[in-house]
Image (cartoon, rainbow, N blue to C red; front, side, top):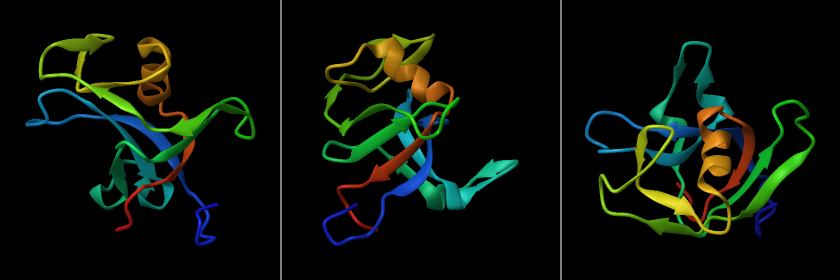
Length: 117
């Protein structure tokens, strides 16, 4: 729960990239803005330092596999990659390939963003 009692936002991790991003960002999509064929920008949260993220097992949505505060180590464009995709940052204290798997495979998650919309 957030300090004001508002519950975390439920959704999924994903690797956000499109023309002009010059690589990908670790992101979260609010489940209220996911349809079978499309995810809306309205539900997009590009993760930033201070966000609180909880990642759940896709096989058991009650099992937490990672939880913590986002603390990104940024990189200049076109210097670091994972699974053949350029990335802009790594989450500190976790192996890049493990972290990336959560996002490329769109693991279920909950987010408490540092900034309100």
